[in-house]
Amino acid sequence: MRFSFNFILHLLGFGVLVTTLLAGFILDRKFRSEQNVDLKLYVGGIVRTIGLLSPLAAFILFTTGIGNIYNRYADSTTSWYQEGWLVAKIMVFVLMLLNGVIYGPKLSRSRMNLVKTMRDNTAPADPEKLLALINRQLTLFYLVQTVLLLLIIYLSVFGSAKHPGAF
Image 1 (cartoon, rainbow, N blue to C red):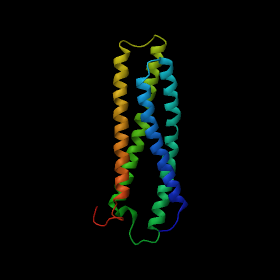
Image 2: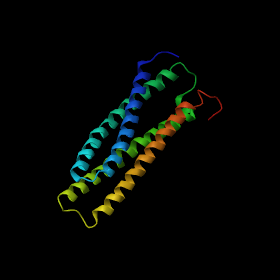
Image 3: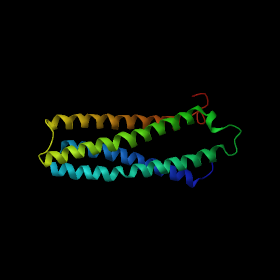
Image 4: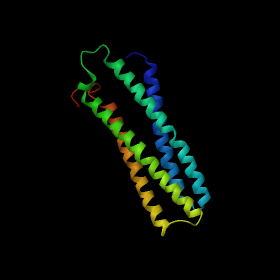
């Protein structure tokens, strides 16, 4: 195996992605356990700041992934799209990216707006029930993102190039 700065950057991008997912989940739990509305808003602001790293991680993973595909198949007689595990990994990555871009910010924004209205005493009827609903949706979001990440790890580790006959 040749040394590749591209591969090292890919691993760093993966580390940033895992960090944002784990930090987001931990801060989400802290947000839920906090009783003071002002502290909830503070934790929510931190979640938003951490969430800004995820597009950076996606960009790094996307560009270095293309580089890794080129490095791996530049001298090969097969094409990358003939590798089922790699095509599946790309599809799962795109699904994870779309889920993170569409649902994550929308749910966080909705929750923060609701908490702000609760602080200002302009919340809709039964805001605690609405907050619990948004929290359940965020739990589902983090669960889906974690499952997709674990599937990407599985496909990376047990792809056919490492273990012939697995896929």
